[in-house]
Amino acid sequence: MFPTYTIENYVEFGQDCQQKKETLSKQEFKVFQERWGRTLVNHCIKISLWWESLAGEWEDKLKQLPFATIDRSGLHKLAQMPLEALNDWYQEITTSLQEHGVLRPQEMGRIASGFIPKSKRTLKLGETLTDEDFALVGKKYKLTATQLEALTQQTLELADGEPVVTENMFPILEAQELDPSVLLGKSDRTTWWLRQKDAEIAVERSLRLETERKLSEELDQRLAQQAQVYEEKLNEQAQQHQAMMEQQAQRIAKLEQLMNDGLSRQKAKTKPNSFFSEVNSLTPNGSQASKKAKGFGNLAMAKSGTSHQG
Image 1 (cartoon, one colour):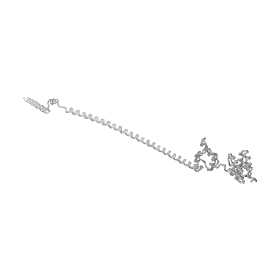
Image 2: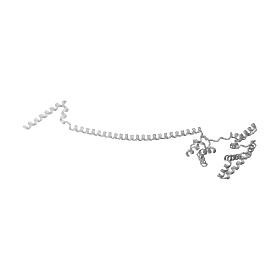
Image 3: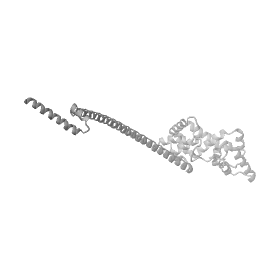
C-alpha cells in the first residue's frame, strides 16, 4: 500500500479510517473495510489512537529508531502494550541496536510481545472484576451489548457498594440458566464445585434438622395430649373409686345400725320375769331354784282349790 512503510504512514491511514468510521454508515464502512482489508483497517485505527495517546517526546524517539521499514504487525503489537511498559520496550530496542548495529523490522513486534498482557480466558474466584472481565463474560456467553450492560448493572447493585468480585455475578448468571463454572479455570472450577456441594449438603442437613425438630415437636405434643387424657381418666377413676368407697361406707354404717337396732329389739323381747330373776339371783343353782319355785306354785294352786271346795 505504501511505497515506504513508516510509522507516519500507518498513523495517517488509521486516522483516515477512524474518520470514515465516524462519518460513513455501517454498511458503507463495511464496504470500505472489505476494500482495504478488515485486519489492516482495524490495526491502523488501533495504531492511530495509540499514537495520539503518546507524549510528544515518545513520538520523536520512535520516529528516530533506525528501522529500515516498519512492520505493521509489529507496530500493532506495540500499540497493544501498556503505556507504562513503553520505556522498558525502548531500552530493550536500544540494547539490541547496540549489540547488532541494525534493527530488523521484526524486532519491534518480537520485543513488544513480551510486554503485552496475556488476554484473560478465565476468571478467578474472589478477584475484583474489571471492564475487561465483564467483556470476557459477554464473549463467553455471547451476550449482546444490552444484555452485558444489564448484567454489569445487576452485579454492581448486588455488590451493594462493595468491590465487585467474581462470585457476585454467579447468582445472576444462574437465574438466567447460565453455568458460572464456564468462566473459571480448572482449579477454581473444582473449588466452586466443592463449595456448591458443601452448600447443598448444608441445605439438606438444615432441612433434615428442621424436619426432625418438627417431628419431635409433634411427638411431644402427642405424648402431652395422651398424658393429659390418661391423667383425666385416672382422676375420673379416682373420683369414681372415692364415690364407691363412700357409698360402701354408708351401706356398712346403715347395716351396722340395722344390726344394732335388731339386737336391741331382740334383747327387749327375751327379758326374764322379775320375780324369777330375783330368785335366780339369790340361788346359786338356777335350775334348783326354778324347781322350788315350781313347787311353791303348785302348792299355792292346791291350796286355792281346797279353799273353793270347802
